[in-house]
Length: 351
Ligand code: NAP
Ligand code: G4F
Image (cartoon, rainbow, N blue to C red; front, side, top):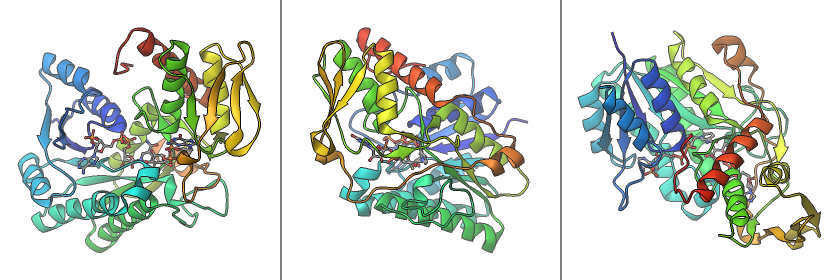
């Protein structure tokens, strides 16, 4: 018999890849989407059309993580077997500007869902989108499930509450709740104000004459970047285990923002040479002498997570999960997709 899944954050990057995965496995898929003045369904429009064509269940419901009543109504109506909580104010820098909203959605929002399950006796398997940002200013590297949390932003603090309340409901009430401590994962569907997509889209726009320069913050920030398509598979694998647990999901390889720029620039047929330092640093194309990258203090954060790189040995052993795409493949995929999108005048990258 087909299982039913509900995805919060279905319109986001991960929501779109998870939709495809669950539909391919025969799930009835439901998602919550919030009301916005313009529709934010670009990532799932094609998925929805395909589901319709094949007569598969792919239903969207209006709700908001800050509105307990709307969540209750939908959960009681859908009664899902699995819930993937991906909805969040997911931008770390924005969380410094909107800490209260970020906490309401990312922290209290998780509790709202858990309380619906508990008070109505709904026996779901629950996935919580926890984050490597929990490690924050970590004092050891690589990080795994035993590394102490040291969150370095309101976003990370909100996600720490989400992590802990899922663990608490698991321990106290025997709820099947899993935390995926996912390191950064990207794709051509990544939001345009996260650094990888900002770089690939910016370089493509410069290449085709729609933008002058790419303005960025800390070029030496180090992250463990994987492919979103691989990471949603880890989410699903967690919920298939009899025993709920928490898992780090990562590639184990660290790269700087600077590395990412250099590789993406090559795909756009630029060769970056770095000149100057700090906020005066620029990235110049060796052949043409054109300035492609400048540094702007505006994109620095009040506090930065340190060298984030994960050890996913537990996910490999218990879930049989391994990433299929390396850093080079990821940069190539994103840069190529954006060059094509900008060249063809499209707005949403379809991959
Ligand atoms: P994303 O593309 O920014 O998607 C976030 C989703 O949450 C969108 O569908 C958004 O809806 C929805 N949302 C935001 N506020 C909401 C609210 N108040 N009520 C209902 N829905 C709301 O993020 P993502 O990259 O897919 O990440 C998915 C989850 O994983 C997030 O929880 C994120 O914090 C976490 N995470 C991500 C990464 C990563 O590297 N991508 C790593 C670790 C953890 P709209 O489309 O209307 O904006
Ligand atoms: O792409 P980012 O904004 O991602 P960040 O902050 O690592 O957060 C992402 O990954 C987390 C998992 O670790 C998720 F939980 C979270 O939801 C989100 O998906 O920034 C990456 C790095 C940072 O160190 C930032 O300071 O890039 C640096 N950076 C440099 N210039 C920039 C920029 N980041 C952004 N967004 N924009 C810049 O211009």
